[in-house]
Image 1 (cartoon, rainbow, N blue to C red):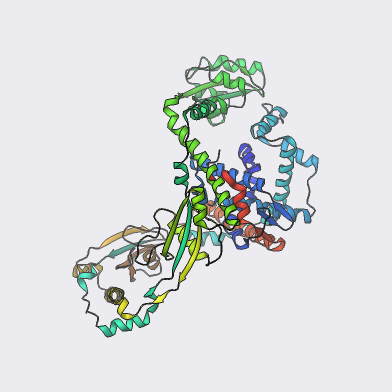
Image 2: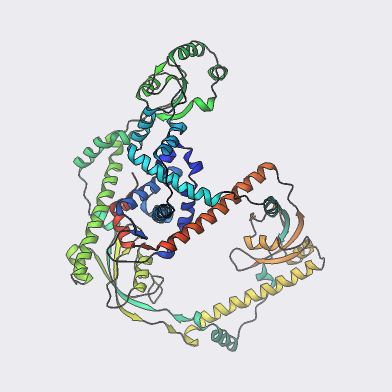
Length: 634
């Protein structure tokens, strides 16, 4: 909640460094401590419990924030790829750990101190520059909180900042480090290179059986029949559940009527707002601006900067003050309003752009509404069926019987390997569930009921391991075809490497790359102005790294992107980086400072987790999200 409100106030982010660093730390800060425990809260650090409600709220906050940055709503599957579940949990855990440490240090902030901080926030000041209770209360209403909760959270934030400010005070990267980093990054090289067709330049002698047997003996692990498992699978897929959902027209119509304000595209306007301390000043400005031929120039003469008066493109519902909103949406384009007495100031309003809205009819959105309802109903029904399966499993019923009872898909799979294929190389189970089913099959053991595997589409799979066929070493005769292919490919790559090495030696002795190119039938290509972080077409990152390890005129060979051939390269020129500009040094200083701060806070948070002890219950986490994790953030 506090992170959302910070975005509203804006300048708190400059001071609230802890939240930003915690997100970076979240990727690795929790995973090492995860372990499963019995019925317990989703997470606990020391004696501080993270409740299911806290985790749900943090998850939604992360979803909403990321969706805003990407400009689109995320699906639960996309959220998992972005690590939303982990970052939400890490933020809660790390914040709780710092709060606990702050308590041990007896850090506090008086009522007078927190009141002064809140009153000093520019977002809460009126037109007279003083704290405005009306603006403060409006902010609280917009963010769905109350004064007591806001003050409590703000106090905790300030106390956390006391700790991080102390940790990070005085961190300044040395100037010499910044200059060396600049030289390292901005040095450029010109590279000449060629890609010979080695298949035309080398000839491979057929491998006799003795050499094939020798290769087989040295690489036996390559020629093994993989472990296979016989499994029973009960599938609860999202698509199968959705296919059984029936949404009647009356439901669609009722939902449309309830939500059509959100479905419609509202009219938006670019609003310019000029604030004045009193009515007389506003009247005087109106008299001058209403006659001006160039509004921007006239407003500038009155001391208003365009960036200060432009509120952006807003819908009516986006505007805080209803009186000002009413005035703005009553104007014609480029029309200036008369003075408007708003809740917090007297203003003049002008609309410089109008983006028409669109009211979408029921027929236009009927399909969208049906799909949304079907998706919501599918998520609910999936969770209900999941719970029923778990209840029946707890009662000792086999998967086949449960599937028949609940009319779910059941499969007996005679053999499956770790990649999800059968012994003859065909897919053991069709669809996107194959990899999760294979993972579950090899995570379980015969006779043991494993937990349901979560599928990528939001469904579940229950996998019982019936029997295990251990991996088996293939004899030379059984593997001869594969041995021949692998040994021939190894021979080919060795011959290419040898041939390329000879070409590099010739370049090293002063022969021109053009002469080598002519002899091999290749074309010399040039990559100029390459930095260490540049990967030009035709070269790989490994090739660039080799080039930066060579002196001017030095040559080398490097693998191609597919790893099957090699390119020959020569460093044609080395250009040291020009002296860093003040702007470049400032950017490097900010970057290195952030990295140093992140390292320090990461070590601090890691130490707190180890000190207090962290436990995370994955089953409780999944249960805490429930249907919320299966649908888009609202």
